[in-house]
Amino acid sequence: MNENDRELLEGLRALAADGPREAPGHIEERLKTEFRRQRRRRSLLTWFPAFSVAAAAGIALLVWIRSETPRPAPASAVAAVAHAVDPVAEEDSDGFYPLREAEALPAVENAMVVRVQLPVSSLQLMGVPVGDERADVNVQAELLLGQDGLARGVRLVE
Amino acid sequence: MERGDFSLVRAEFGMSNKVVPGAPYSAQAVTEFSQTMADGNRIQRTTTGSIARDSQGRTRAERSFGAIGALSAQRGAGKTVMIFDPVASKSYVLEPESRTARSTPIPAAHSNEAAHAHEGPPRNMASAKTDDLGTQVMQGVNVQGKRVTRVIPAGKEGNEKEIDIVTETWYSPDLQVVVMSKTSDPRFGETVYQLSGLNRAEPDPALFAVPSDYSVKEGRPMGPMMRRGPAAQ
Image 1: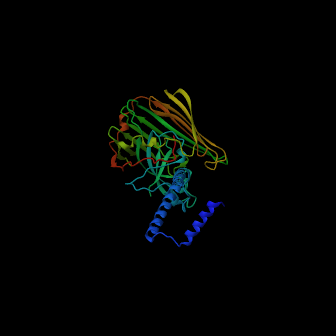
Image 2: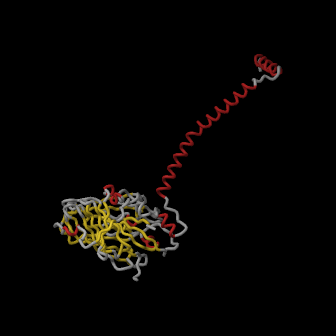
Image 3: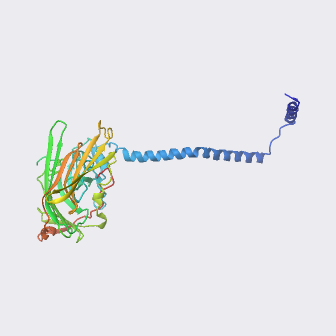
C-alpha cells in the first residue's frame, strides 16, 4: 500500500464514521420499483428465445402426435366404433372415415353408398381400429363403395 | 338365416366422379378378392356387376351384394341399380324387388370428391414408386398401365420387415375408365377388378331412365363424402 492508497483508505474511514448517508424514503422506493421493473424485463428478454423454441417444439409435437399416433383404445367396442367412426344423423351427415384396407385401391370412378347392418367384428375385418370387446354387437353403418364394389369409407348411422 | 358378416339394409345413392360425354360403353365388371390366412386357409369371393355410360355422360351401375371385400352377406345377394344422370342432376337407386326408385339431387359441390379422397400418400407409407407399364390393348381398347408400389417401413405398424403394397392399373384414356386393376396388400389380401365384354356401342337409353312401373321417392341428400384421412391413391 503506497501513500495514495493510505490517504484514500483514511478518507473512506472518515466518511464512514461521519454517519449513515441514505437516500430519502420516496427516492429509495422509486429506485426499488425501477430496479424490480428492469429485472423483470431482463428476465423476460433472457427467457423469450427459450420460450419461443419450447412453444415451437410443443406445437410440432402436437402436430406430430395428431398425425402419427393411432387413436387410443376405447373402453368398449361400441365406444371404440363411435370413436373411430363418428355417428351421424341423416340430416347432418358427416364424411366417411377412410378405410385402411382401401389405401391402395384405385381411385373411385363410380361410387355407391349402401347402408348395412354388421357386427363390430366385421368393422375390424375392414381395418377399422376398434377393440375386441363386444365384437358381436350389431351396428348400422354406411359404406362408400367404389366401382369394384369394395368399400373405401365407412360411417356409423346409429 | 345364412351366417355372414353383414346384411344389406338398402342402397342410399350413387354418384360418378366425373361426367364423360361422347364416350359410350357398356361392360360387365368382375371383382375377385382373395386372402390367404396365416394357417394357409384361403378366402375367395367374386362379385359381379355391370356398368354402362351413354353419350351424354349418364351412367348406370348394377351390382349384387353377396360380398363386400372380405365380408359376406348374410342373406342372398340383393341386386341394386344406380343411375347417375348429370343431365337431369339426379341420382337414382332402383330396388327391383319393391319396384321403387329413390331420387337424390346431385349437388355440384360433390363432383370429384370421392376420387380426391384417395389422393395423396397414406401417412403410414414412406414412399411410392410408380413404374410405367406401357400400353396394350385390353377388351378392344388401348390402355395405359402403371404399377404403384408403396412401402410401409419396418416398425411403422409393428411389422418386423417392410410391407410392399402393389397396385397395377390399366386405364383407357379414350373411355376414361380403369379397365383392369390389381391390388396386392399383404395386410388385407389381393383384389382383381376387370371389365369384360366391353362394348362401345350406344347403350339402350331405357337403361338410364326410371322404369315407368317404379314409384319414385325422394332420397336423402348426399352430404359430404370422404374426410381427409389415411386413404391413398
